[in-house]
Image (cartoon, rainbow, N blue to C red; front, side, top):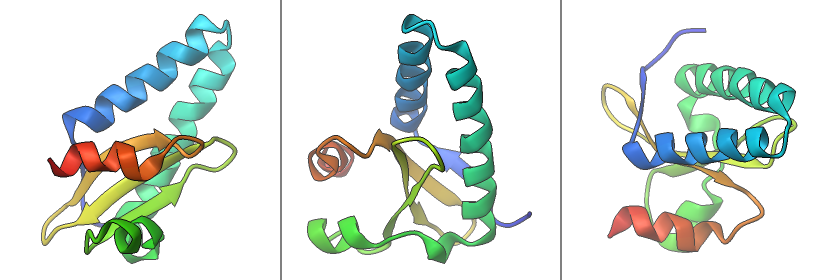
Length: 108
């Protein structure tokens, strides 16, 4: 798949690192590897079809353009905004958390 390049913000990269570190601390390196594989697949899907992500949190937070795409077999959501030349990845959050509160940090 091709499309616009994805540009993760520093916080999105920190989210990914925290997730990986959590799996490794739990002694689950196979889950960490699967997470990376699924994240790469999800990034490719978003690049090819950026308008397909859910706008639920955009409506709830009044953040036009915000979309979230769930990772398959993992609780994380990739939260992003499509720009003219790239996809701005804001966060990669655990969907079990208070997503609006976590996204609010990005908008400050």
